[in-house]
Image (tube, rainbow, N blue to C red):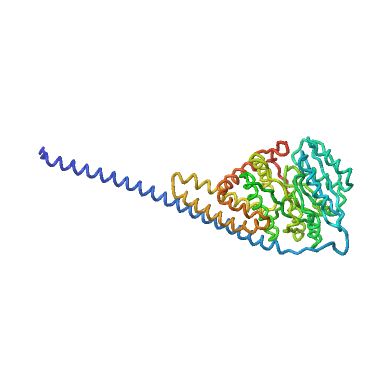
Length: 432
């Protein structure tokens, strides 16, 4: 066998080393290219989803802005219809409201509605303080005030039970509902009554606003609640969906019984306002009105702290899954997904850093769109100065929306000293 020269063996070794090095670089280049491709694909997906969700959200806000504008154009009768007087019963559910009920009753007794026969029915829901005693003292001075006392039954829907009891004892044609921690403009009842008389309305919703103090928790609630109030006016004006707040609504007593009251939603701990409103809307789609008047505003205090605030919002969110009005249900789904998307961008940003930039741009556009909607709303409620806080509270609002929505669907909450759990097995829906 012929032996190869030594220099030939070295050449083979050199070529082998070069081949191995080239293969390694090729593998590295292939892996790098694959990772770059995956990164670009993820970035593209994030941007596309962000654009789609952002456009849908902006479109909803534009529609609400249009609705807010037209909500202030409705005209109502200046006084009674055909010289007829109107009997109105104000239902005030109250539990442990000794610190608030006097101010509420004083504002109701100060109502100026000469063509309205007004009675006030306070329904004491097993208060553990001096609420009932305070109301009895007012009853001795004014026979327009009535007091009903309920036992402390083991059930979920305490407020609905109180409202039902009040309506059963009422003599008025029109039922006006408010809360015991609210105060009212002297022409509140007259304004609601005029709206009711205009075009044979069956359900009237009206605005509610918080008293604001320069504290973070108060300002945050003011801006959040004011947004909801603007959406309420816009949604009713455009018939986009039904929405209201139980602290300021009125409806015809006979219509309440016609739609079978709270039947079908009676097991839910909340929903005495919006779910009932939709039941009435199903039978009287032209009988729903929103009164955007300064005289119709009801005033109340925000929750005293973050804990109470979250408990309240979880209670409100707990009825979302039971909305028979699928229009608002899908709006809520879109809004919730849009806010969750910021959490997705935050998490993905640890691998695809441009996701954070996408999130910041999207948040800036979200803030601008929301401010464009809120500026006229804040002007109506005389809260414009608090809008300076809005951009800085945007991240907190996103986190709150995500957590409250989740806990409202799966959690429990405290309300008026009671622990409430949402019935997950409730199948009934409001029937028209």
